Length: 322
Image (cartoon, rainbow, N blue to C red; front, side):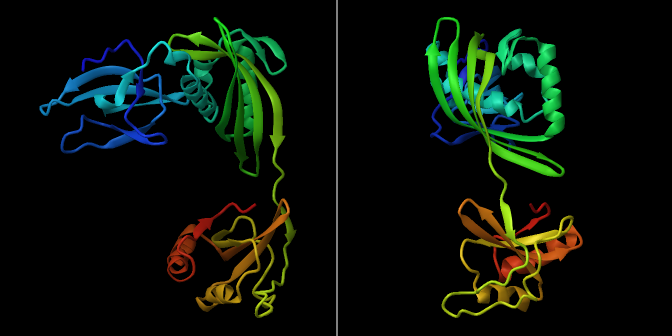
């Protein structure tokens, strides 16, 4: 095939939504998967290629992933050179923005220049933003919310010019720290300028910032009607207050309607206590059933075996209950 090392490549022959395995050695009898590349990935570089005895060609590639990258061996059958036309396509722009937002999940201070063109024309309300200015702002953001998650859900091309492309994005986000969290969505306007085979952001504006309301606990001591058929009331001795902080629980189920008496009896019959938390989300009330509390992870893990066997096979341990 003779793939060139100077060009950039994209994934081909993988169905939409699929992934390509990246291996530690050219695939023969034994190799280990070290990562996966999405079917819509672009901007892939080739370091070297090798032809195996079976005439298949394998290439050692580097693919961007957020502020870092994945590297390893893939079969050259799944690589296609990125054309000049594709370098300004919506798919290529979307791939860049996917990595742009993913990079903000990391503390990537040393790689800001990989995604931003300095001095930036505009960043939020500030103009002529330098690398130092942006670093200071990012440090504050990262300290406030150490754990960050972003998901690009919408992309619209607003304007194409010879020297820039304006786009609008919608991004779902979730921030966490040890004692709090927030989630919501933003609408952004970005100006992209060409940078080799990729882009850089020269202007960034936040058009809308929406913080979703947190679930509201509407009842912490509750007597539940088990079902409309039996109209049987579950004893308040079984249904205690909302789960305590700093304890370990097994979440065994969430219900939008009244909880069956038989379901609750299956918990007590197996020797477990439980607590029910009622949470308001919009116009609906969710009833969450927590088995416990347990004093340690190991204690909860031992109980989880019984819970999954006899109560709910999808139950799991939950430590941070909001």
